[in-house]
Image (cartoon, rainbow, N blue to C red; front, side, top):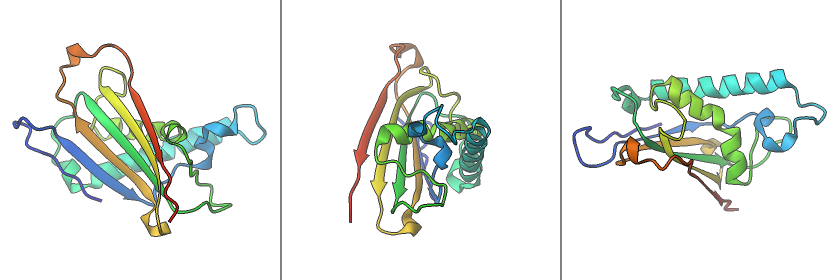
Length: 174
């Protein structure tokens, strides 16, 4: 893990970047499971969201760079990079191949950023851009979630009132 924050009084943007090793969403958070398919249990989904949210909050609060943040960033650009090695049947982890599915599965991680007081809220006035990326890594030890929060230099009042979501997939088979 590691985080960096630039001086709050400088003209540059403030940034936090933390890698949480081994953190992958539960298979229950896959958008492809379907609400009415057999085995799609609301309690399991709710529990998976709660666990992911708490894991992200705890990991962020444990990071030394994050501890230095005195107030939430606002507005922000959030970048989520999900890195995984290969699918392992039976481990109950979700390893999506596209960024859209990753963002869906990681919604609870964004809520964990709110719980950790890194961001104020995940509404369009506070999150100006949400970017998701999926990457294959060479070893299981490199699996995990990279979360980067960048404070935008835009005025809250100039937000056009529309959500912005950017998704890119980067599957590199090594």
